[in-house]
Length: 203
View (tube, rainbow, N blue to C red):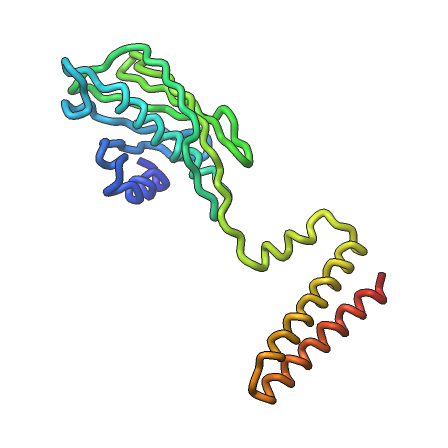
């Protein structure tokens, strides 16, 4: 088990993949490999591994692979999964899953997991994962307002924001009972208006 796989294995401790018995062997953005010992409690009658357990095993690998490709702060969830069952596997055997990318996009990722037991292919699973963007910090949200705009458009936008700030300072000043605090807020409003005027003059 490589270091990344070991770290993810620890994060899964106590959750469903741990209950299932998934053992990660390799975890990189390009490939995830894991194995699972087939137990009686993962089987249907008579001792054949349940299809749902196979699918859950593959889904875990696709999710891990997606996580390794996510931008900072983003999360993921499975939105579609298709499984072709090709052969049965019985209690006492061990299955191996090899997960590789079919598509790694900004909004979705698609993965193919080949599940084998020895030299026998048990199933081929293709799943699609949604990429859920994390909440951006305020400064990043503010910066995104200026993306793709010309310099003049950026100046005009910033002037608008300065005037909006001035108006907010005046609202706060109107509700302030402390005279020194009110004067400080009005002074801040005046600075915002001055900044807006400076930007207007630069157009």
